[in-house]
Length: 397
Image (cartoon, rainbow, N blue to C red; front, side, top):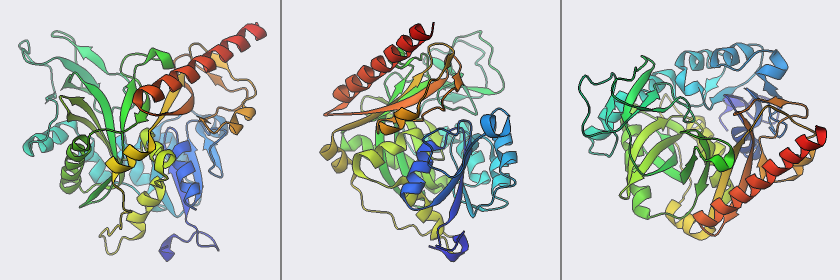
């Protein structure tokens, strides 16, 4: 390891993890041998960072990117990594990087990567599939497209809605062509010039089986898929990496129509679907991410990516999935400590924690022989979880 990042006597870098929910990134970092501390909105019971701080519980404030950047001022760390939603706040990322090496896309890259109009221009200019995008509402009825109103600073599918002629369009939103198809994502690691895809998954969106609706992200299933789909999505990832200088782990969201992935968003940071690669074939997400920055010399990145044939790996392992369960009503959690013994339950809330209706409660995992089998297993586990919650509420009542 580069001596600049030796935070203690045993040479292990002390890495600060910041974002809405850092549990998955912390698991990967600790598993890879890093000394991790975290600040996020939850400080989940199963977050292995030490300490795993919650803005609400430990600082008495609600989560925001600005509040998170304020909270870390007194913490000591060698490097800092971020996940959702810091990609939408380059100024806060710059603040976080003043006291430690930034292991992630820098603010200048984020400003371009999170510009939906620029991403559309790059992709269409390179003859890659992407939906039409508009910065303002059309004056005449659009004949060829159905539109979605989408926040410029989007995240998790929140605040996305169907747009019809005559509807207002806030300045904080853009219009994006609605592509009919199957939502998915490609996770990859980049060094500014080359990419390695390490996970491709189908997204679960607005599924009532997991307590949500609309366009809200609620999970992912990684299963075998055509090599051509992986190759085409990877070509888009490579084009964006070359044009924007992407580094570390990133994620492309897309919708597959006619076998073609139409890229709808670039998430230039650690994403929720990535941990499925660790579960499926032991790919160390954080080690791959950190290696890009540890090997940097003179401003140049020289990552040595691990060997991985993603299509071949997926053909051999079956299907791995995760689903986020949302609260059906305001609920105060009981003693959740026994949940820690279940390897397929994550993002465990603290005992006595109150979760508001419509907010994420915890995450479940399941496996299967293929996508359909894995999805059925997730639905079954979700149904059991909601029944237990209902039984507990009736017992308390």
